[in-house]
Image 1 (cartoon, helix red, strand yellow):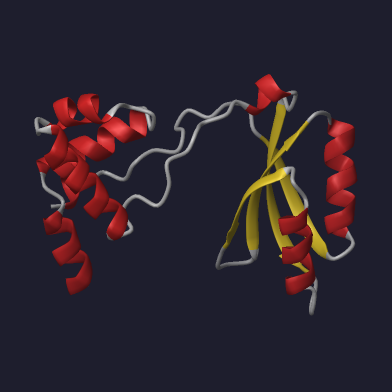
Image 2 (cartoon, helix red, strand yellow):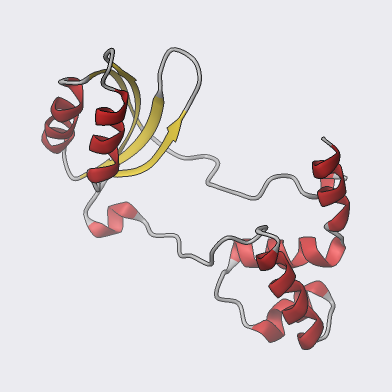
Length: 157
């Protein structure tokens, strides 16, 4: 616990401003980032480097809309491998590109995964491969009222 308490204290208002600005637009210019954090450009660059060095920022990425790429359907699949099939199922999930996210979890299921597919027929084909080695429970995504976002940094203090 002490490690987290020390880490949280190390995130000041400027660091939080940098993270907030990058979460909104990872392509923001250094000048704009410095303005958002109320710092000089060299100070903002140094803080950005430190946040990367500490592992707070792991990557700069883009947010792609799967529907715009021809994947209008998304599904959340809970996966419970059959006895002795855990590693086989994990490999199937890793090797199937339509699985765009997967978490290994505790509880009755071992994996909770997100798939993007072009059709229900494609979903069935993918799930058939998994179902040979695991029990699955599938829910179709209707909407995403909360997209991936930063944790409540200001409240962590």
